[in-house]
Length: 422
Image 1: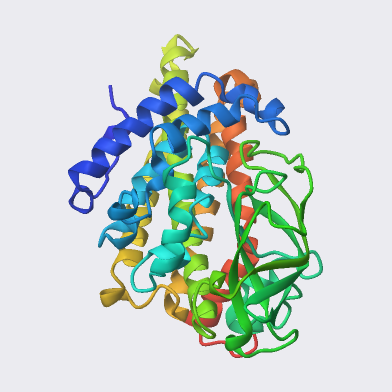
Image 2: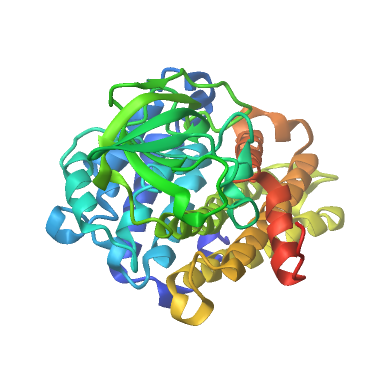
């Protein structure tokens, strides 16, 4: 019988260490997540089940050390020429179990990518934060704080708005930054953020990239207030809430880079976020394929297994072909993020447009064929025992973040058709 291993993965991009690490993640998923994931929806506030599962992978098995250099106790992925290709397989394996957990655990490392990836490594900050991530036996809640209540995802539309709508301010006072503002919806907030990368402006209303700042703020810094988590339609493992900053002081050197570079490397984080979202999507599709295979090999119609009926063949073929194609697209996108020498810098307008277009195309196709699977399964498609409805709700949340489908379409049209007013 066919399995998820029969779908194409570009093996030439993956080194033996990563494939071994992926096997560890799959074993973790089978033991620590899949048996309990139906209970995660009720655990959205307390995380009494969710947290121990995440702790096992990130702290005990050490995946939160992934991006730090080996001499600081990390795994050195940040300096690898195959960083994103190898992170893609880990995202898939986590999402096969629970995409909300994959997002939460992956986003825990997202702000660090602004200081740990070639060509913009900030060694001093890596040394500062390495003990937090590499020596802890607890999960570190990393959060990239972008969205604000008054403008939603305007901040992510950097190329057009150029930071002019950012209202969270950073003012220099001696050898410190003083931060004031309000952020909404960051992953790993809702009371659990330990380290935040905060997108600020040093000059409100400015369209000068030099005035966009990415500054690290410890979650326990004086003046930081986190709300409790919001209850959402899905992705219970990813807590989201409000964060308020009231005269929060951090050292000047907690800024990720220099004026101008922060804006570029913030764009880099957006490209990465769009590209890696593909792994959360194809990971979900892998498990939907497994559950669908079980269903059509168990249920009968007119005396034949469901899979042997002509009317069903189209749904099965569409699902398999879509997963095959999207998985190849996802790994190619990851390879493009790795190979800026061939495809352009990750923060360039063309890479932003391409990663946005891949993401919204992938999300649309995933939701379309997963909806067909639910239709095929009829009432069983909404039955929690089959997990399809959970994956469907969770993956819809991935379509909505980073500006949703609309911003993806705007940026794709802007670059491919050279639009001037979008």
